[in-house]
Length: 135
Image (cartoon, rainbow, N blue to C red; front, side):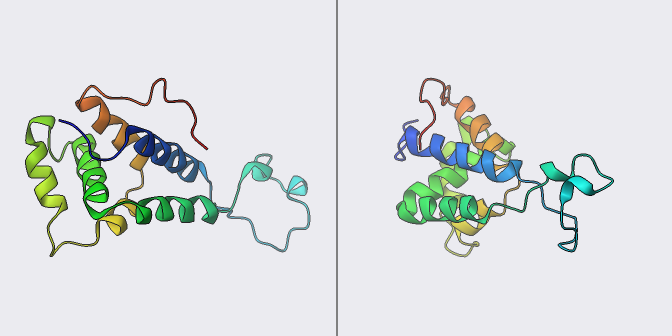
């Protein structure tokens, strides 16, 4: 299996998805002037969801061709176990279903996207090792 989407692009998506997944929604009220004054010693570590990272992920996906986004969705499905590597053609066909929800929307709704893409790459003996952090 050869990907149409550059591995570097998929790795960048994985890095950004990890950043988005690492965000912890702030559950403190805005009334508190100094989070270090709270009873929760870890409140200062909480962070609002990073909308900029989410927007970057969306823009990255939106800049890709339809076939590439569908390929990334199929890769996530392989990582999730919905399909295995031997069923790659079926996964791609399902990702290209014109009656299904938009592939970008489906990808944006996957809570553990980075891990699933990592697992999907591993199913084809691919990885981001050696790619480095892409900014």
